Amino acid sequence: MIKLHDLEFEPYISEKEINAAIEKVADKLNEDYRDANPIFLGVLNGSFMFASEVIKRFNADCEVSFVKLGSYEGTKTTGNVKTLLGLNQSLKDRHVILLEDIVDTGNTLEEINKILLKEEVANYEVATLFYKPEAYKKEFNIKYKGIEIPNKFIVGYGLDYDGLGRNLTQIYKRKENMTNLVLFGPPGAGKGTQADILKEKYQLIHISTGDVFRFNIKNETELGLHAKSFMDKGQLVPDEVTIKMLNAEVDKNEGANGFIFDGFPRTAAQADALAELLKLKNTEVTAMIALEVDDEVLVNRLLERGKTSGRNDDADESVIRNRIKVYYDETAILKEYYKKQDKYYGVDGVGSIEEITQRLSAVIDKLQA
Ligand code: AMP
Image 1: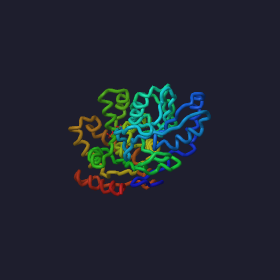
Image 2: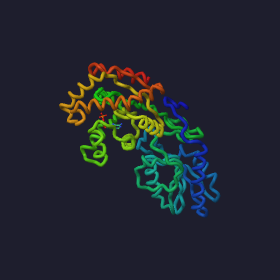
Image 3: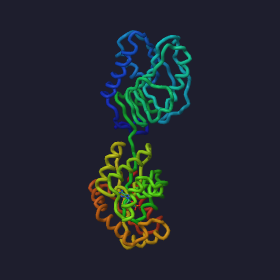
Image 4: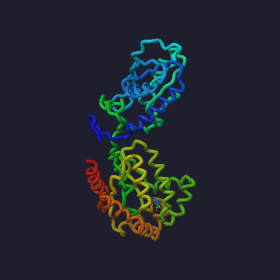
C-alpha cells in the first residue's frame, strides 16, 4: 500500500499486465499503419509512459508529437477542459493516432477530437491504455484499447492524484474503506427501524431481502410468486434464489460507501456468497451487529406490528413462533461464523429506538475509527 497526499492506494494492475496490453495495442498499430507514416500524438501529462512504450514497439516510419489538455482536478473529472497546446504542425491528410493514458467520461477526448477533426486529417483514431466502459458517455468509437477497468480512481504509470504517482511503474487504486454491516437479530428485533436511521447517519445503502421479496410479491414478479409460498409459512426462500437477488441489489449500487444488510445472510451458504461478492468488489463484511431481544418480547412486538403492517407472516402467532424458531435453528449459526472472524458484536435490543440507535452507533463509530 502507498499513500499519496491524504489518500491510500493499493496495487491493482501489475507492470506485466500493462506490458501485455501495450504489446496487444502495438501489434494492431503495426498491422494497420505499416506504410502510413502516422503521427502519434501523445496527450500530456498522463500518456508519457504509454506513448513511449507503444512508440518503441512501432516498427515503421512515424512521427511523434505531444499535446496537452488538463482533465483531472483531484479525484473527480471536472468536465472543464482547456484548449489544446503544443500542436505546431499541420495534420492535413495525415494518419493521426491520439495516445491517451485513460478514457473515462470521454469529456477530454471529445474536446481534443473536436479540434483535431477540423484539421482535415486522412484518418484519425484513438489508442488508450485504460478505458472505463461504465463511465464513457460519448459516441466516438475508440479503436485501440489496452485494459478495460471498472469506474475506479487509479494512479501510476503516468496517471496522477493531484500531481503525485505518475512515476509508479504499476497501477494502484484507491483503497476502499467501505463499511458493510450485517444487521442481525430475530424477526421483530427492530432491524428495519434501526437500519432506516443508520443508513442516513452513515450514508450507507440499506438492503432488506425481506423488503425486496415483498416488493416483488406486490408487483407479482416471477421471483415474488416463487418467494411467497415460502414466506407465508415463515420458511426461508431457497438460497439460490435469495443469493441471486442479493447480488443484483448490490450491483445496482456501484460506488456506495457501504451497505447495511438486513435479513441477509441467513444461512452459512449465504454468508459465503456474501463474502465472495464483496471480495470481488475488493471489500468485506466489516461486522455483524446483532440486536439481542427475548423471544416473548419479540412475539408481542410482531403481533402488535401485525395489526398495521398488513404482513401475512405477522398476523398469526404460530407463524411468528416458526420464524423465530427458524432463526435459531438455521440462522443463529451465523453468530458463530462471524465470531470466528472476530466480527460479531451483540447489542441489547430492548429499550427506546434512540437508546438502541446510540448503542449501535457506538459500535459503528469504533469500527470506522
Ligand atoms: P424479513 O422481512 O427479513 O423478516 O423476511 C421475511 C421473509 O422473507 C422470511 O421469513 C423469508 O421467508 C424471506 N427472506 C428474507 N430474507 C431471506 C434470506 N436471506 N434468505 C431466505 N429467505 C429470506
